[in-house]
Image 1 (tube, one colour):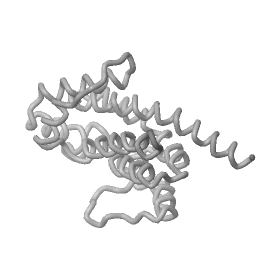
Image 2 (cartoon, helix red, strand yellow; image 1 turned 180 degrees about the vertical axis):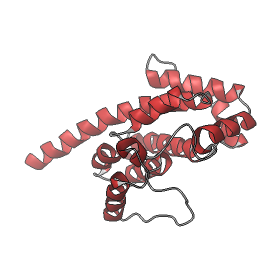
Image 3 (cartoon, rainbow, N blue to C red; image 1 turned 90 degrees about the vertical axis):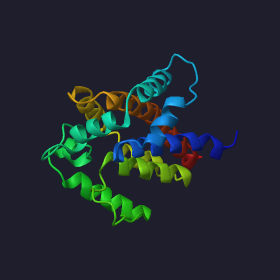
Length: 199
């Protein structure tokens, strides 16, 4: 299997997570999730895919839309803050967002003016990781460590503790399991890159 074939599933998972955090899933996506073929295994990822398939088949689109509203929008604000700045500095639009914008600019990425949320929304950051993977960029590990590894566990914990969370508890568990694997794989990648530079 070539490197591009190995990379594709990672990008797909990042894009799926981005879609689920950007907005409640459409009826079509919910149907797809309820029918997704999962591999049997003892890993946390396998268990999370099975759980996501089950919850998608048992939850209506309206229920998930209401849950999304309560979690991420609310009246004033939702129970969950999906922004890096909030988790790292306790407020929105702070230094973590500035650092992210600088790195995005250095990578050649520009903000889509149709998107209202700041770039440090978990959905936007997952989309950037998908693009870096598709480009086979050597910056994947650096970007991950700077802009995901520092706060995703706090986000997961916040979702798990939210009263309104049911469907998104499963999404958060999948996010955590996937990003833990990413952290290991990308640290190994960084070591390999450094070793090749020394040769």
